[in-house]
Length: 197
Image (cartoon, rainbow, N blue to C red; front, side, top):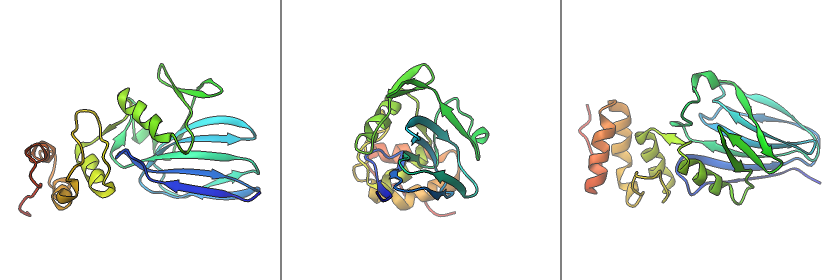
């Protein structure tokens, strides 16, 4: 058996990528800093573990054995879980408890462990439960880049978002009053344009 690695995008703007790796031999793998935090569903020696990682600032070496596998959902910068302090998660990870062999707990709620094909369903459930939140500018910048059609509830959709890329980048640089202005442009259906400062 050889190691297989599959990577894909997502229908949900908060997600950078979804990765599945199944190891065909004992190996050392590396996780590299990418500005994302992850939910990682690992099967090691046949046992399931759910790891919630923070941002990493340096490469992390992973020892993997034949038959181990993992599914990772990497979340874009600016996406976070309310109540989880981002700075406390820097270069850290937290094992999430299992509710049973097929589901894990986030707070009091149980969620089914996803596979590569249905990982988007888990993301939708986390958004619906209010367990994923995004800074508006980062979300819209992600929507522009990904061309995604799903967004957070109450946040409108991404139709025509590509027209707004340059404006969104300028909003991100100009400061905290800009998300309100960005929503006004988006709600009016106009491209977000500002004079450069």
